[in-house]
Length: 462
Image (tube, rainbow, N blue to C red):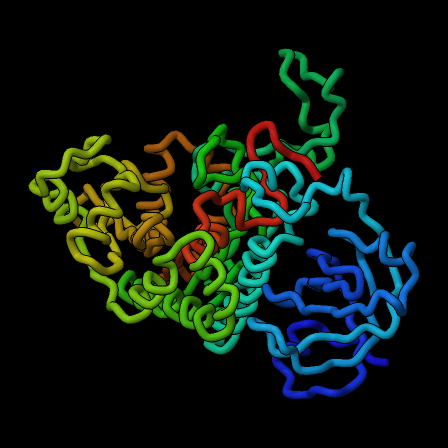
């Protein structure tokens, strides 16, 4: 008999038919005549009730059916007389795939803190919360590919191992095959990387953007979607050492085009979640963030405000609000500043543009005022910045001058500079941290809870 997923059974109109279901036991209760098993297979938040007439089953089989056990049930799908469920399965046979000792299985029927669940991240997808989060994560990944594919973008694979530092920040994980206990050295005592696997120092990428620009200047419109790595010692609810980034790059896009695409992209993803993940969103709304669906619809139905950085600073300074961090011109805005602009002043998402060049990366197009660059940050309620992007500097001379100004190694970026020497073109792009998006869409408060296995300082389990 064909096995049906629980989500299919619950949504099906079929009753009074034979079915096979497989899954993990959430709970078992009952009396001396009947046992009621809540079975879940990860396909939806809801479990299906399996009704077991104890007289038809031996005591040893029933003893092994405990919370966490994995079983197969063959039986009859019928309408349920109980409240809160449309159908149930009357069991005719049960096969036990795997037992779970109640004395040691950590996910018994009780409340568990998110901190505790991080310590057993290999099991937490079996909980309702993380099942919902990971189903939403899948839906958002699918929607990202669909959005770009439907608009004529090409999926571009930037390398994960690189010799360049896109942001110039230096917080990178080194990749080497050298013996760290006894590395080869040059005559002046430095490590001899010519003997390393790639013949030079290499790292895990912090961004696929620079290589993505090469794709845009060949194929027109591309997007990357892959893991990136930051070796920052940041133990905060907003930072991971390994996370996923979506980075579109578009030839012939100026800053205004970039802003339009970013707004369209975010609204598409939120609309997709509301339409295709409703049950999981309602569960997250009930359990974790009562304003979640309201906030998603707020973003979906409001135009994003375009705001110059300088004007934003003035608004913050005359607000009368006492901020923890200063907000003078030239500073990088903190989350408290960004959220004030979105949640209290404009009451809608904000795209902040034209930042001081001193706080932005070398590749951003310089404005004629000599002080600012054509950067943009999209600011959302609750989390602040969700997208960062810019029009890229297309002028070879200006780009070289900026690299020298920042004391960056021009020789390592020879290939990048060549694109400005041969057929340079206006182009723009942005980056969306996938986990930042998921924080917003799921309502979770810690970024470690929207990725299956979080990588943070001193934590690389599983």
